[in-house]
Length: 143
Image 1 (cartoon, rainbow, N blue to C red):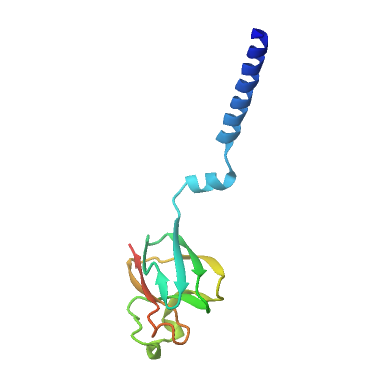
Image 2 (tube, rainbow, N blue to C red):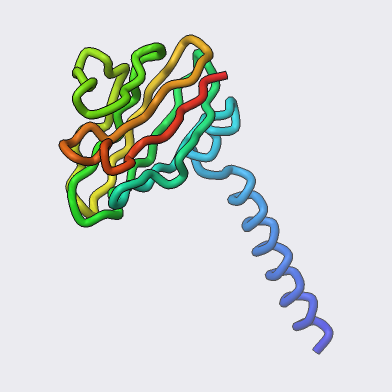
């Protein structure tokens, strides 16, 4: 009986060692993130707001936007150039947009990466007709 117990313990020890070795190897995707931090922000668009309504990202570093349209109509996420704030839809012109996630159908999501080189505050709006005037506005802070 004791002999069987040693064999069982040996098999358990070998299995544990193999498990630790495989765990130490890890997944290539995890290793890519370990070398440097990446910034990801989550955005949910609904009628007629963004949640959250403010984000902060580092200047000069790429950040990823995970945009989810949780509403019943299409929405977009347009970052306005600094100093070009929109007061009403009548003020909106496409050349005031720094970058955007274009109109996304209801229930869908989009992931895009952007970089802003200079620190400052940007207005974020949904520029689809009626959405900004209904209150769809937020803030993106670059520091």
